[in-house]
Image (cartoon, rainbow, N blue to C red; front, side):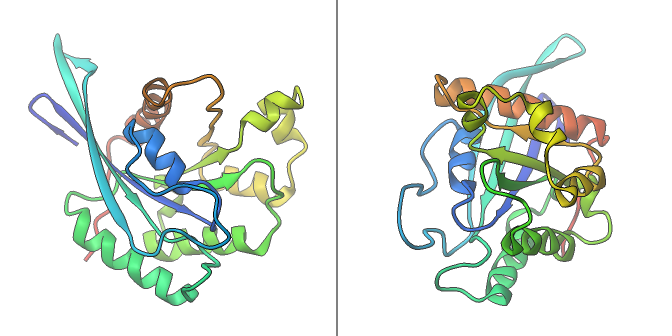
Length: 215
């Protein structure tokens, strides 16, 4: 996890088509690297890895630490032109090729404004289990996109979760209550990156900097 004065986090994005994976990736990187726009079809067909370096991210023994963040964007489930098994195959291959140092966190991207009971979301959870293995939940965090919708309806995060379907609450229990609400309202990419990476780092640190390795 650490090398001299550098911290590393390898992050995988998983989610259904149009959940906002690529947009989350751009926010984490602090720049528009992944294609993200309105369209009637799935934009992401191939896995794409991008990285960024964040200086003075943390301190250790009086020294400033730089964060090396690598983000792997992936095709969504229920893809407009790829079968489920092909999506799984491409992600599995990319994990093995791109993350030689292991995976520290998978972000399971869910839309806060769409009920979790949809079959596509259930498939995404199953995909995480199949890709990451029996300890998938230790390395998975749920991130809710469209969190600005909560603000628009004057709903707080705890109120949202109190009214959430049982399936969603069960998922949050499985991942040890690791979740993030993304609300990009009135935030620059740099500011949002700072907020998201700090939350991610806390979860990685609580997991004792462990990483998953792939053949």
